[in-house]
Length: 363
Image (cartoon, rainbow, N blue to C red):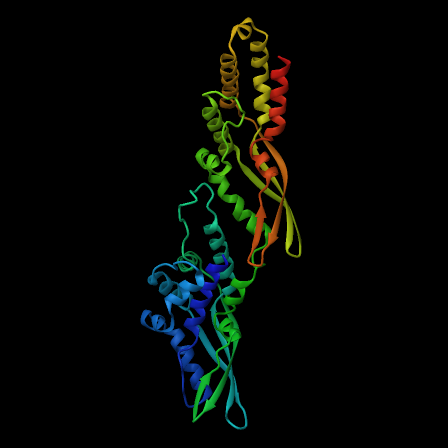
């Protein structure tokens, strides 16, 4: 996320500054700068911005130039300004110009954009070799296309130096941020998104997972250790049940500095109910003469079939409260989905397997 933010910051700030102005009067110098921003077209943008520098800062390809150009055009589409005041030093070598800038609400945009960047960084259910990333400029364009942001007025202060009857704006980080309505600062804020926002973004994709997605994510096989040819089928039935029942509810979040913990109710299949429904058939088989005559392989096949039937017929779900920790790494919040989360997904597998093993041993 940091790399995306850096690339976006460089592009926005470069579009705002470095046009190079020598003008008779500090206000005119500032006006020329702001008029250039207000009248942005593709040729103007490409004269302001080095896409190679942006790509280097991002650490990856930033997308096609039209994506970047369109995003910046949309960002400054309703840009307006008003020069409020100006002052000069007595010797005429320095000046300050204060400007009110009206543009779309940069904090609202930054919030949506950081959410989009975070969502894009998730690759649940995807191959590790599959590149699913989208440039920050494409995401910014999507945000601007899809949302009607309110307007906000902020203040920018220009400091200029004068020499030989001309004035030049002194570029600095503060001015860069002010010209973009605070967008630079908002994108750099590791706490812009709350822990519950990040956790919600993390868990939401699971709601649309298929059985195959769950298999890829959990990366486990022969979950019940049946040791027969039925193992794959049983696994698929389990993953289908998780896909059918998964849901979540964030019930509480507590933040303390750069750490946070959230209580989340995870809904998944009720594996105990599955085991309970299989105990009767298992006991009936275990006490039959058939089980005595059957080989070990036949015995495993029969118990595997009973488990398959129980999974296929299961309609029960369960809710398990899980505590999820989040750490702020200086870029954003990082949730830790540990074994307790996995166990909740699997319907409290360890407890259920213990019940199943006890039933098998007793038979």
